[in-house]
Length: 481
View (tube, rainbow, N blue to C red):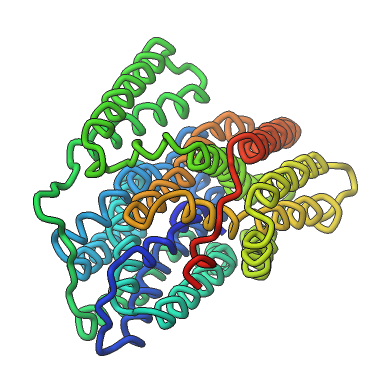
């Protein structure tokens, strides 16, 4: 399970793409699933490999955070550009280019002799994922129509949930049996199969609006501002950091973020980030909820395997299996919660679900208790967090879809998914304070307890956002059914 690549509203990007049914629907679906699986699996296997990478490459607290965030940063900053670039230059072309870049970067990571080289490879993987993820969904949207589109999206989402579930297990087994370099090599056959299917069977499609220009300046400002702010947060956890330098980087980052916001408001409907939608209180509420909830979840799925391996003596595959209930319960509960939200509205499920997540995170205070084991210290919290996320995910996606008109569905969905990834990015940067305590088991466990309480607070604030800002809106699917 990972927030790195799979955003809560990614499937809406496929719904928003105009359809031109293709001659090879099965091959198109297979190419889309295999391509997106690269990002889905890679985003989750890294979590269980962090202790092994730290041991071999001497990453340290700052390096551990960047092993996750080098990927998340470029993915988060550029994924909103990936969809419009596919519309402009061709969706299949961007999909294939993203796969090629991702595979090349995977080889760099697998062979990396030092930390800076693997971080460069991780950043390049994020750029490749930002190109292939939105266009894998756009290929689905363009290749299917009507009921067939819904079935294809459902299949893609189901396989995505499975990939998120098995990713940590595969990664853990490879780390234990072969070594951490193998987690990058497993991408090669999957990516080659996706590329061959797309090149051989998927037709090119584009949908560029006359006069519309890609927001390259917005992408540059967004990447620079996120990068500086993330570096400042990560560096703050490193002993001996020059505080003046860290504070200066943060100030410049916030300044660039302000310039980015001004540019996006000026560009209006052609903006990379649809800030004109913030006039809608429901959209603001669901955006805040997404950021806070996925920050809490993102911190958990990175931190828990690390603590279990370093403090509790778990193997990599055991640590990977510890989070297995989360994607399973989300997959099983989403369809039911979608129907319930359609009947009673999304505000109550979102508010209650986020509160359940908060309760689940507080249960991780049992970590490190004398005589505790997985069944008593890990599983209860994981099950409760999984239940809360299962209650939230489908209503969250539906709320985003119903809070904007059809012309803005793609922009709103892409923005919401980027916000979810940004939450994970910020949470991982702050985990440097926990990684810094890895020298002592007691200190590491104590820091993990503090992180669990912070995550619970974020989830509680997410619940408040739902109850205070989100209005129950009529379902568009019901209106058109």
